[in-house]
Length: 129
Image (cartoon, rainbow, N blue to C red):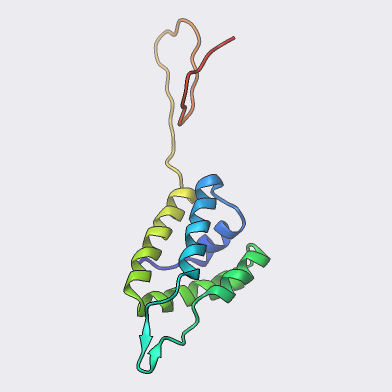
């Protein structure tokens, strides 16, 4: 299991990462709200599930103290629930991709005749008017 970063949680809660960050936050929220499959000796685990901490982080957005509390609970929960740990790793990978997009380098060399555009992730037809 990857370490749960309070900084990543705070960044996602504050809306960082654009649409990909929003999707990662939505996935994290759904994961936290999912019932835990962890059990104690006496039955279902009584350990915190993270819902209260998640709601607090949503309310305070990027409070590092609240984000750290959520990170601690998620780490404890993943220690006791293997499926949760696997799913949390996937969400953290999604968050990392949202918060650290690949760098794009565009280079034009030689002579260009006509128009040229540079950028990343174009879709659909591009026309010049």
